Length: 456
Image 1 (cartoon, rainbow, N blue to C red):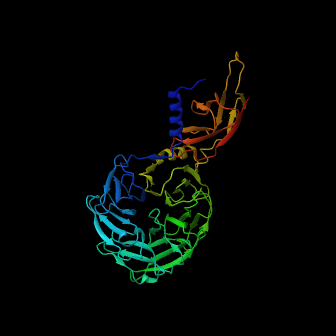
Image 2 (spheres, helix red, strand yellow):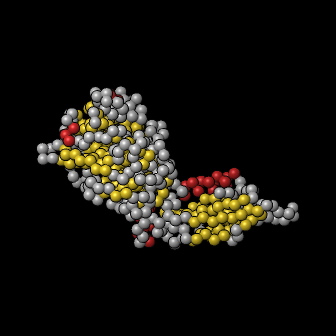
Image 3 (cartoon, rainbow, N blue to C red):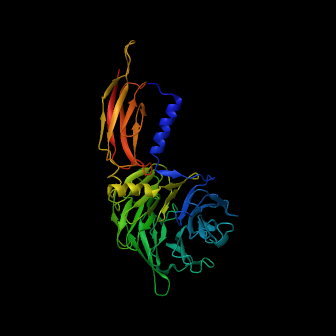
């Protein structure tokens, strides 16, 4: 069986579309994004290099790309948006490179609210409890993290020169401006959480005092630390008590060790966990049991509160955020992606009554009509170098079968396909079968791999 160029293209297109987990957006920019704010399933803001801010108000159908005047050389690592018109953005860097701007007209104009005058300060991120109460933080200055706050919507920003009891920083401790989530507001409680890295990996909790200030305490975590590239990179809370931290070592992105922990007491104690496939710079709750984490080597997802994690993609992403009905992520070189539609996965769960992706998305067996084919035939002999493949998986409506081979080509789709090994060299070749809920989540359940031999 010979494969024409057109057929080869069709096969590749099918395989690529079937294994896509994220839906890539068409945004006219090459900026690298780390700031992300998902207001709703329709309204999403992101910020990044070159003074760039982007916005959609129709769920990603169209995007507005903006360059903040006078900020063309700035890197906006964080953004806090409240609707289609109102957003704060924070740029990073020493001295006057650290700034805060605000728009109230959807990005038509930007008001410069704060410019850092302290050459020792390097602001990392901003978090807002409400439209008027916001907090920004800098890496340590004179032994403590520097706190900047506003209580009037940014009309006045106050640098807390006394630190108001912010715990002393350890030598070599800092925060990572990797995803805008090294500081967050605490859901349901007027307070904030800061996560650190470097020579320490701690969570600092600031809760409101009776005089309106914040009382700070620091808590140790089991996240890896001790080098300039290691520590906690992101924190998310599902409510005031339950939360997750992720991190690792960005200099070793595939190292999956001591990079995940959970709290059930508001951040005071942290229990280590496993399952992430490497360094993760961003994490978000989709619901109380569904969590997604992104990093430079891919995305991980859990639907059971962190007991089991599944790979959802291998592309580099920096930040992730969600609303009630949508999940978005951003990354380098203009990368903006949406995960979903979420209702596709929900329909599979509803129909099967299963609560984890692995239940409806497991391959239980792959049967081949033979395990060996010959690479050579006699001149007068008609050679058949195809193998009939039959895949067994739960009978769930809407599942797509995905096949990955180390040699040869796959023809057909569904549970029964043909594996054509014409023209391959002698040796052993593998076929891995997986299933996917309507091309949304990718091959996240159990896969099944089988081997055939091509003889001389």
